[in-house]
Length: 106
Image (tube, rainbow, N blue to C red):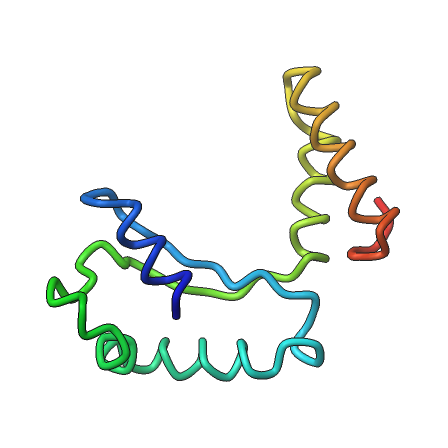
């Protein structure tokens, strides 16, 4: 909830999209459950944020992302990016995730 509140506030008049980044549902059952609740009703969010009478108009979407999915995106970027520096940084990030055991190897 706090991340949605702060992210929306920081975005200001720009559109804000929130992603819950998790290892998997097994390791983050509360976060997944709350996100599901908030996806069903924006009013559930607003009830917990009485200091936000604006109604979070810039909150355009919410979703869930796993570290494995992020690693797949980085791997794809490593293989397809046109610029050498983009390929380099994508590979570095994917390798770091794999080294830490956060995501599958690339």
